[in-house]
Image (cartoon, rainbow, N blue to C red; front, top):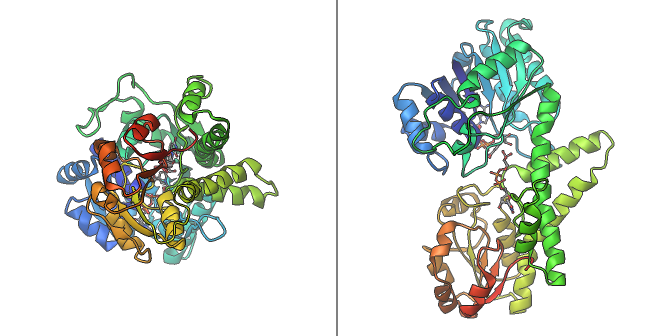
Length: 458
Ligand SMILES: NC(=O)c1ccc[n+]([C@@H]2O[C@H](COP(=O)([O-])OP(=O)(O)OC[C@H]3O[C@@H](n4cnc5c(N)ncnc54)[C@H](O)[C@@H]3O)[C@@H](O)[C@H]2O)c1
Ligand SMILES: O=c1ccn([C@@H]2O[C@H](COP(=O)(O)OP(=O)(O)O[C@H]3O[C@H](CO)[C@@H](O)[C@H](O)[C@H]3O)[C@@H](O)[C@H]2O)c(=O)[nH]1
């Protein structure tokens, strides 16, 4: 099938590369010349496991290409994905300007053949499919002076649930695919597009072997509004699960319970499920914060006060600063102290810094007058580039970050940190204070190594 994808970011690039690898002919449409140049050199602009080899293979096989000339390619696509960013505006509402630009370009390039399915894959507020329809019409009208025939295209919603760090795996082996459309032919087209995934009939690529037991993928066919809501509800539920774990962690440490045991104890109940119950410094990333804010704005537009959504966000805001409180308890004034921070990416496996909890922590440390030395195995370049305002020292290695530091804060649980013996951490820190924001280490082992160790909720 001929497919085009607006936006070669975390979602568009992975979706495009996977669909090309499954045999479709995919054109990525991107506005960033820098990204286009990198991708043409078969290099990934983002750090995502396995993506570079997948990209190279799809490009070499002639099934994946990239352009900035939307109007010349969209007209011949049977499916057009919109996977551009929808960042938050200051009031929390999603900024749809990039979606609008993409939809206008689709309208300008449209000529009625083939019949097209325009798919909102970006996370967009409820009702955005209607907006995209209007903008496509505007684009066509700019060129032709009249509206396009409604027979030529339809707008569908197909939200994306991939996680950064496991994006290829999640795209090939999703828990479900959600398709929201008003027209049966659009659903048929999208089911055809996704057939190899739905039926798991493809040869698994070397970078992402099929897990045992996955033989097919359920599809949820629904109307567009429900589909749009499914995306927000999924993220809100996951964020709430984490905030719930953090709330129980805060109570647990007051009464002397161990949150890791408590969550294991509840997670084995299949009605609850054990995933996304890790207490720590809370959730961040490009999605949860912005999507919670956008859903809150939507609810309030309709006169509804979403109390649970507010509570989930409030718990998360305070949770980020818990490690600072811990540090103040251990060090008393933080001013003039040297603090090492391990991990700045919002989670392991990615170089993404969007809404990373580490940034809130670093900002607060600097505000309090601490000297901060940071290390991250992947995200330091992004930190240098995106936050030149943060006056931190950059360490060459995790050990290097510790030298001369009074205390260590662990903000991102990169697996490689486990390779550093606790005794080394104890030796290098002048005061041996470790504030573990992700409950990464075993508290007993840390104390035995001579560390003054504090986790979260235990
Ligand atoms: N990152 C994730 O893990 C994830 C997962 C699920 C859903 N989403 C949603 O998917 C959407 C995209 O997220 P992302 O993280 O991939 O964003 P991103 O910022 O990584 O990528 C967006 C890309 O779109 C490009 N772009 C902007 N305007 C364009 C235009 N008019 N034409 C062509 N390209 C254009 C940008 O240059 C950028 O490369 C968002 O709505 C997000 O909420 C993201
Ligand atoms: O038990 C947990 C699990 C996660 N986190 C944190 O939660 C954040 C988000 O993690 P994760 O959901 O794994 O990463 P994302 O890549 O942001 O993926 C989320 O956001 C995407 C964008 O909408 C969705 O597509 C995914 O389904 C959804 O999991 C990170 O800061 C994690 O450190 C915790 O604190 N505790």
